[in-house]
Length: 220
Image (cartoon, rainbow, N blue to C red):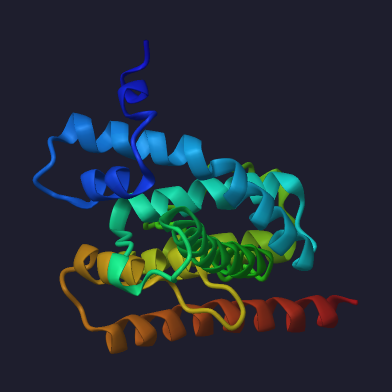
């Protein structure tokens, strides 16, 4: 028999107190939480489906948001008994969970919007130190010139240019952690120095491409 079933017949109030009491043993907290999830998940899911439809999200999104709701409660939720409505604890706890669900749905909606706009960071961005291995024969004249200029840049300039080119999106700076990692990787330089090196790298590339364009026009 699943361990949580020993709490199946407990009142909701007792389950909440068990879970929210940090002195409760970890196995008992986990089982009390599991019992709460199984007792209220269907109610939260139905409510979330209604809210999600208002954002034109699918039932699948409602499932994700419902899981996020209980995860949020597990991490930091604190149901306040003294602030509960005059209704039963069960109804008050549902209302409490619905509030978390609304917040989680808004967070999900904003995250998806930022992903579409290229403004979302998942924290997995890494410093890029070298150009990819590619055959020069696959590049046009402009591509070859740009490749050669980037390859000839000082290490710090090249790393900054490649990293920013990979992750910087229109209207969105590099994630703060990546900026910090980049500065530390280059010996603890200041952000103003990073911006200077980035501009110098871009200027060298632009200058080389302008020379290429003038040369090409002169031959035509």
